[in-house]
Length: 233
Image (cartoon, rainbow, N blue to C red):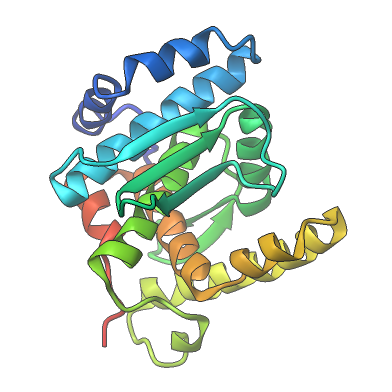
């Protein structure tokens, strides 16, 4: 299987996002004194979010910010609407690298083998992982501001498409694992309730689809299409 980590067309699309980060925010991050890995992961995640949001909406009319500490509620990236109704993406920079490594190790990746069958594998690269998390947050914007039907575990028995059925099943399994993990970690009930919502199931499924597509080789437009995907009925 070909692992397309440095697809030039895809990389160029994300490099453009780096030029659109608020310079003041970037300076604050660089001067924060945080671990170098946290700084790099925060910048890369925001670049992905900016690039994907602009691609989906054809607009840069949204806010973004780095929060230079850990979230007391357990978040490390969050999409929300401001009181003025504008989209805002927040990234908690402290500890972000470790959070991303946890996701990579716990979720792995679902990829298609040479026989055309999806199988679960370990994910050793951070590239797909960060793009997947960025796609997850932009999917929330699609949910709230564009308005689409959500993918749900109840769709598993109704969907004929092999790929969609596999990712629905995989996402359901990940959500079950997350619930047990959050409980054992003593995460706040508010956080657990939010993470188990239909909105989060749908966003996690898109995250996993994007990770898999990026790993196997894809285009920027294909990623945008995945972020806006709707159930096939």
